Each structure stands twice: as structure tokens, then as C-alpha cells.
Image (cartoon, rainbow, N blue to C red; front, side):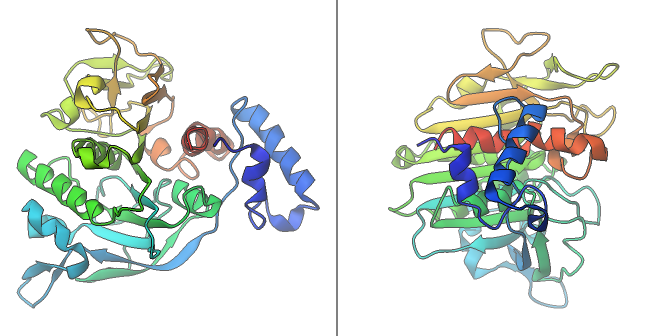
Length: 368
């Protein structure tokens, strides 16, 4: 059932668009949302912040067990064993459990993109801060907080998916430079692990990720749709400038489709992919991919993917809505798409959030 703006706000009595201390009544809050909506994307509401979380623990999938660096997969991630994934790779995969109810009516998994250095990085999908890894040891990372403005915390607070098992990967270690074999084993590990969270009660699976995380969740959905046992389960995939490797990941090609709303003087675009051939089974599948197309690393050719209609990819793309697959081009830089509430200039952040996090939420809200 589609939810109205009123019902969205009604389910958030403690969450306001601005500081709750500044609001005299719900009517005033409602008006503020409508006015901001008109200024950003017509017809799309501004989605209030959720409730922040703190004190979370992100556990390593494979922990060090002795002084010499021997590693083993921890029991709660034993499903990764069947994938044959490299233990050294799994050691840097860190996952925080957000919610684990007794009934898994919904399964939600969100992930940040590839960590580019020894330091952490903030992410608008998961809500992790730039210093999330400051307290990481050989087994886990403690004291992690998730920002209330993130997709994860907004979605959790709105409770559109009740009784949801919910986890975020602060680092999926889905490294662009790893061998194809290592990457494939890692994807299979995530798929096997997520399958352990699906029960006879599960109705929906929600997957979201930015950059390499966007590619990862799309590949996870691809594998899940090969298992016809899950055809009755709705799968929702939110990809934020998802980046796949041009060696067969998701069928990404070397043909570039230009971003039609790219900033003047830039060469933003996406590598063409025949998404229909990649997902022959569309049953209860819903994908929304946001494409910016800035090169992640200059002169590297590392950039997002883009679906296309017809036999041949066009030179310049257009927004797509095939019912099961939606793609919107945005003019933002790669990092701005991944973290729209801090990366753009302050006077552009509201628009960036509207184009990314809130656009994904609006899409979801109109599907459920």
C-alpha cells in the first residue's frame, strides 16, 4: 500500500525535519516538509531524519586467533565457509548487526563502498562516520555510530519493514583491484550468509549500497533471483553510483554512455550493461540505480555502470523506468552521491540528499 506524506510523519512523532525544539506543532512540521519539497523535487517529500544509533559493534568475518596471524571464520559468519573466500579478504570484511528480531519478516542489508585507505570513510547509505574504524582490533570494531540522516537510519525509524533483521557492512572489502576469483568467492560468501537470514516468514529483502557496495548488492540480488525458491519474496535494490569491474562483473562493457545532466566540462558517464540479460528473472524484483558517472580515480576508467534500451547502447543516456528497473542520472560527484549530507557544498546538500537518499526512499515508499 502506498503511504501518504501524512502517514509518514504520523509514524515519526519524535523525528522532525528541523530541531524538534523549534517546532510548535505537527501542522507546522507538515507545512515545512511540503515547502521544502516544492523547492527540491516537485511531488517528492523531504524525508525527516531517523534516530541515530551508537555503541554498535562491527565484527570481522574472519578473526585473528594467534600471534602469528592465523585467521578463522567466526561462528556467526560460518556461511562464508562454503564460498571458499580467502581468509585474508574476509578479515577486512566488517559487519554490524542493527536488529535481529525473532521473526525475520524482512531482511535488510546495506553496505558502504570500498575503503580507499587505512582510514575509514563516512557513508550516506549506512550512516557510518569517517572514523568508524578507530577502535578496530583483530576481532571487531567497537563504538560505531550511525548517522540519523542516512538511508539506513531513516528506513529503520519509519518502520516500513517491521520485524526486520538488519545489518550494515562498514567495510565489505569488495576490492576493485582483487582478482576476479577472489571477488566472485566474496560475492558467493555474502549470498550464502544472507540466505541464512531468510526464513519461511520472510516477505521482503532490501539491499542498498554505494560505489562498490552498489555493485555488490546488485550482484547479490542477481544470485538470489537464480534461486526460484525465493521468487515469492520481493527484492528491492538501491544502488548509489554502483561501480562494477569491466571483466564480466554484471556484464559491464567498455562502451561508455554519457550522463545527460553532467556538469559542463566533465565526462561523466556509465559503462553500458544489458541489464535485461543479466536479470532474466524479474519476478518480484525492483532495482533503482542512481548514476553519476564521475571517474572514481582520474584516468582510471573506474566509473559506474548504465543500463540501456534497444540493441545498441546510446551515446548519451536517458532516465529509465522499466517497472522492475529504474535508473536516474544525477549531476553529483561520486563521493557526493555516496555521502550527500556532508560531501557537497553546504548550500547544495539539501538538493543532493533529495536526488539520492530521499529519491531512493520515495521509490521504496511507492512500491510497498
